[in-house]
Amino acid sequence: MNKIFKEIMPQSRNTLIIWIGLVVVAFLFGWIINGGEAEVSHNHNHAEGDAGKTTIWTCSMHPNIQQPKSGKCPICGMDLIPVSSSGSESRGARELTLSEYARKLAEVEVAEVKRKAVTKQIRLLGKVEYDETRLSYITARFPGRIDKLHINFTGTAVKKGDRLIELYSPEILSTQRELIESYKTVNRYEGNSATEIFKNSKNQLSSIRERLRLWGLTEKQISAIEKSSHPSEHISLYSTLSGVVIEKNAQEGMYVNTGTRIYSIADLSTVWVKMDAYESDLAWIKEGQNVEFTTEAYPGQSFIGQVSFIDPILNEKTRTVKVRVGVENKNGKLKPGMFVHAIIKSQVGEFHKKTPLIIPASAPLITGTRAVVYVEVGGKEGTYEGKEIELGPRTGDYYIVKSGLTEGERVVVKGSFKIDSAIQIQAKPSMMNPEGGGISSAHHHHGETHKQEEEQNHEKINVSAEIPLAFRQQLDNVYSYYFDVQYSLSHDQFEPAIKQIAKMQHALKKVDMALLDGEIHMKWMEFLNTMNSAAKQLAKAEDMENVRVAFDPLSEAIIKTAKIFRSDKQNLLVFHCPMAFNDRGANWLQNKTGVENPYFGSMMFSCGEQTGDLTPTEVKNNK
Image 1 (cartoon, one colour):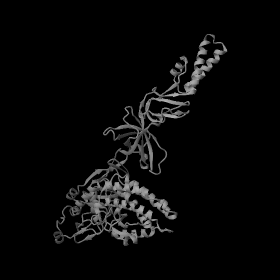
Image 2 (cartoon, one colour):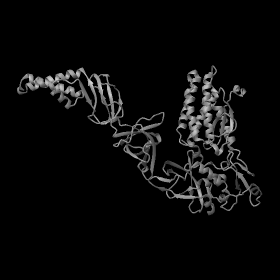
Image 3 (spheres, helix red, strand yellow):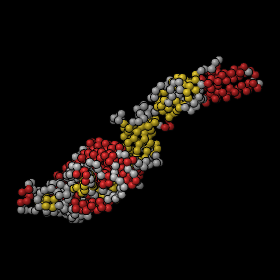
Image 4 (cartoon, helix red, strand yellow):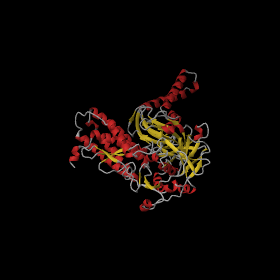
């Protein structure tokens, strides 16, 4: 999934550092563009009164904005930066030449494109479970009454041969008598083995012994019965394996039939770890691979297992596949139910005919599906040329290059964003503007597109009756928690956003869709599915960028909901930010006027504009 700031800036940089760096770089553009000789004015009066050169004020994100005085960008609200009108020495359409001093200011560093075997790390989450091949059930093999349980609770460790239960059974009593009589008859006629009585008794004795063996009695128990003069009222059953009792299904005094399960025993000397792997990771996972994982119970200690099975069925809801890992557990540290964090290291060379071509992860500027690198031009000191390339997967600190570069070229690994910004201000093709030239007003362009989309996508539903009041009141709770999420994102509050989305999910479950019928019921089902899916993604996001990515489809669904179902007491104001998602734009709802941008937060808090008002007239009149 594309990330908001990774679409706008280099994927490998920390967002905050990049934006701080952008502000610093903005004030150095005068030096960079002029080879380090141009001076940037330190105050407005000096900038405007410099007789030697003309200074214009522009926005680093919107270079089409050019003003003779300092101020705020009318699009994003960022401070305008001073830039000298004299350009840098440049050659091609995507080339920029910097002096040695300018290169030092921009902190430009380069690295060679090379072929290297790299390791792809796949991080997975999973849970320890029983080894299903080492589960055993202790069942009643004959009807009777349990008079004694020697294992009274689950979790008890047992060894093979330990006594588990004592049963009273009329069938066993009768069979014991038959065994004793047959044994006596065989002994009585043992000296006369040719007689028919001896042969019949011998066959009968073998048959009875086999019947008792199948009922679970040991050879030692059967021999003891033969030699006794009276049958035993109770028969003991013993464990057939070592392990831990994980289920106890019977109580003392309980009557059981043949097949009744009494205990479940698991051998925990070997356990399974089941993990969820996404579709994109499956190409790197093979049976037999080593897996290293850790648990919360033993910080700093790693466990090793091997991939033993990959589920052939994909879970359509989570879009994941179960991967099973077999792990030795002789010391019993791993307990079923424990959560694990696992890493599978896959050698990239195993999946390619030759060693892959790689570049450092800091080299490409990634926006959407495009990746731009700046290459040092041979024979032209300090000259850098922009190239669009096709990237493969990221492997640690490197990206695999599919096309666009050749081995031996030198790419910029530090300072590329500054070079791109300088090229952008010169209206040349850059990461943000691949076509080069002037850029139309973002507010105007996206505003028109937004209006067209509104007209095309406006839902028209014939509602035969008003939405029930009870339904609208339940929906108001959903709106309230949504507004709390929006507020948290606009103020860069990660933890509160996660807490509020959990409350919103709970509120969605409380909305009684049975209050609706017909077409309006089906429409609510559609919106509900979208909101649940987006809220689920938002709830499990691990950083602010992913939260904001998931907030976009959630907002679209809540806006569509508001258009049809409205509110019983809430203000429903639609806002639009033209810069979100690499200038694709994104919408959201607020319950108050004044832009509070949830997609950029404090970086561009006021970027955007109100584009609609879905507040019902009766709500407005009551305020």
